[in-house]
Amino acid sequence: MRRMAVRCDCCAEDRLARALDRARIPRRYEHCDFENFEVDVYDDDPRAAGWNRSLAEARLLVQAFTRDFGPGTEHGLLLMGPCGVGKTHLAVAALKELVLRGHQGLYYDYRELLKEIQGSYNALSQTSELAVLEPVLNAELLLLDDLGASKPSAWALETLGHILNARYNDKRITLITTNYLDRETRERTPAVLPTGAEVPRTEETLTDRIGQRIRSRLYEMCRTVEILAPDYRREFRRARSVDRV
Ligand SMILES: Nc1ncnc2c1ncn2[C@@H]1O[C@H](COP(=O)(O)OP(=O)(O)OP(=O)(O)O)[C@@H](O)[C@H]1O
Ligand SMILES: [Mg+2]
Image 1 (cartoon, helix red, strand yellow):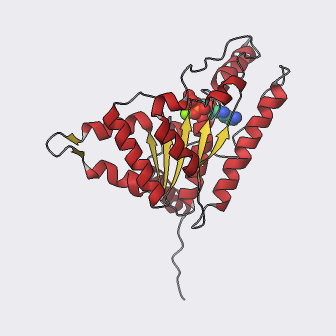
Image 2 (cartoon, rainbow, N blue to C red):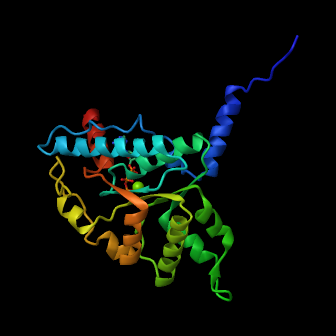
């Protein structure tokens, strides 16, 4: 009798966990996928339909990017919106799905990346360790989360510019999320939640945080996906505390 080796489910789960680890997806975001991204969240405000539409459109765009990702992909995505609207959730959903399809992806929090680059800086050679830069430069798909979250030194900005330029020249695809909006978008951002609370919007624009040159490069590298809605974390917490009453 011929016996055939069949991969068991736990091997498949192991491989999956290892693939996600290699992509450095933080535990906090491991649950994120397209199915559990809600798009029918708000209903108690005249602007609710607009917010739900914004969530639905963003999910559709990121899903289409993921579905079509391949050798012909020319652009990454720049997910822009106020805090807690699900930017990282959607970007991680795309990264996870592509990693599971066998693509080589890498998650990096922007502040973490700057810290690692700065930490590996060698004053003698005036360069950073290639060990940090190499995977970031060469990942087939890089997710740079929370761009602009810290205001870097001129030298760190130079390095960021170098990373983005090198990836652009090598036609590597980058997914980016940011809280910082462009001036025009900022003016359209909802300022008040259904609860009556103010949405904290950043005064500074993305250009203020990363400079004109890098902002301009991003127009070429990425399609912009705006998500204009209230903070899901805050709304969700409110709903849960109401449930408990
Ligand atoms: N529409 C949604 N459906 C389901 N879960 C959501 C939705 N939006 C956000 N979440 C969840 O809320 C939390 C916050 O979302 P996320 O971190 O993606 O927001 P963000 O826009 O990246 O915020 P920040 O600007 O602070 O980084 C996550 O746990 C995410 O899974
Ligand atoms: Mg985020």
